[in-house]
Amino acid sequence: MIPVKYFVLGFIFIVLVACGSSNTSASSLFEIQLEGNKTEFQQNESVGIVLKNKKKKVIDKITYTIDGQELMVNGNTVILDLATLGNKILKATIDYEDSSAKVSKKIKVLAENAPSLYTYEIINEYPHDIKAYTQGLEFYNDTLYESTGRKGTSWLRKLDFKTGKVLKQIDLDNAHFGEGITILNDKVYQLTWQSGVGFVYGLNDFKKIDSFQYNQSKEGWGLCNDGTKIFKSDGTEKIWFLNPETLIEEGYIQTVTNKSIFNMANELEYINGKIYANVYQKPSMMIIDAKSGAIEGVINFGGLKEKVTKHSELNVLNGVAYHPERKTFFVTGKNWDKLFEVKIHKK
Image 1 (tube, rainbow, N blue to C red):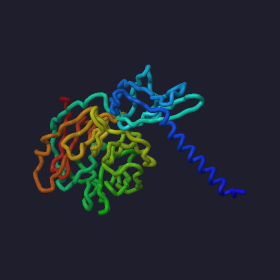
Image 2 (cartoon, one colour; image 1 turned 90 degrees about the vertical axis):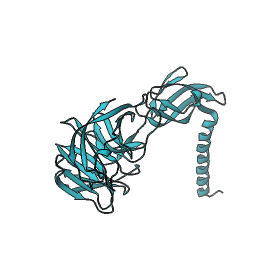
Image 3 (cartoon, rainbow, N blue to C red; image 1 turned 180 degrees about the vertical axis):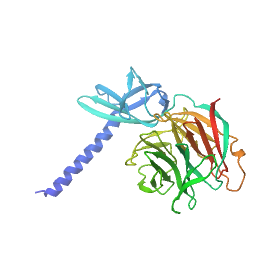
Image 4 (tube, helix red, strand yellow; image 1 turned 135 degrees about the vertical axis):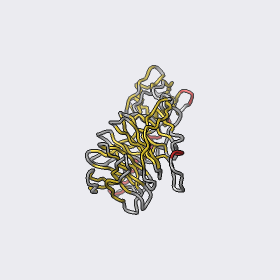
């Protein structure tokens, strides 16, 4: 007699092998083939598609999906009408001969149009702390809030932007490298770079009321919000959506142009459905559609760094805040002694 435990183990083994062979059999039966063997496409592009039927099975139905969204098929053409862009998995579900199989193919879906180009006009110049390694910048009720980085010099400040006077400040522990901030529901949310932790403060007293751990995102870079959710950049192509109550990452978009997937979004600001993001280590800023991830514009801030005092600690452009009443942007950089109020113009 075969002992029961060996029988159970043998049954589990058979099930696992069967599952494995099922997955193998799907790819041995069918394969997705795209026009020109391409793997990169534009949003809303019509693409020729064929399901290679390797074993000449009788197929009843084929359904193509990306991100769970069924794609519109017209003859042998599929339309990539997607809500979000970037790296995607095209899946085919095939019903055939009273059976079903699934096969997939990795593709990239890029923006439909090239980014528009913008330039800037300086409206005003204000003093800025030359020792501030600016990471986050945001206005709230005509008051400027700033977060800085580097271990030992990371802080959160409330400022009079016209004079540069510090109205309130809290310092981070020397172990933390401060990063971006955003303000929502009378709270200030602040990231750290590689510590994997963020902090939540009361807006008025800067009292620390909570902390949160990062989940799937790699690091902490920039923050902004649209009034209901928080956007977080992490040094990759992804901008994550955080629930402001739980601080759980509930999804993401990927930042893309019409040519490539881009991974350099740093400090963030949200305005009317667009995310304005500093390009890390570059004198420029991206305008990103907050729903799709398409980079719709690039602002060239070339020449701005030349207008600040030169010194050994002078670093790159970083920090963007929008003043809703004045309808202007405020930008500065790491260890810059000036804060610039600018208007953005399309070239």
